[in-house]
Figure 1 (cartoon, rainbow, N blue to C red):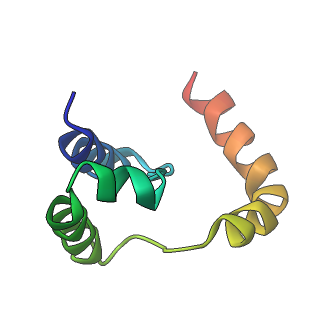
Figure 2 (cartoon, rainbow, N blue to C red):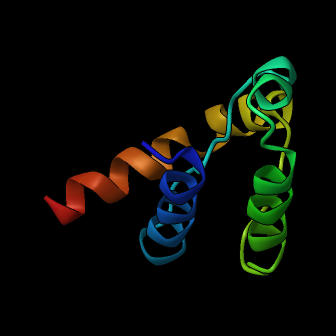
Length: 79
């Protein structure tokens, strides 16, 4: 499974449907597998998506309680 293509697909999905695209790995894994160029490519791709909001994990955690009710209300109206 190609993690970079999987993440690009996630970016496309979030761009069309909303949500969160989360990239998680350890730097030693990237180093061990020699995938720094692949990571650079994925991050360059993500940086081109201007309608995304980029946040750290802690910022996302802080935002969630404020938006949780709106998210659930939207899901109920779509169902």
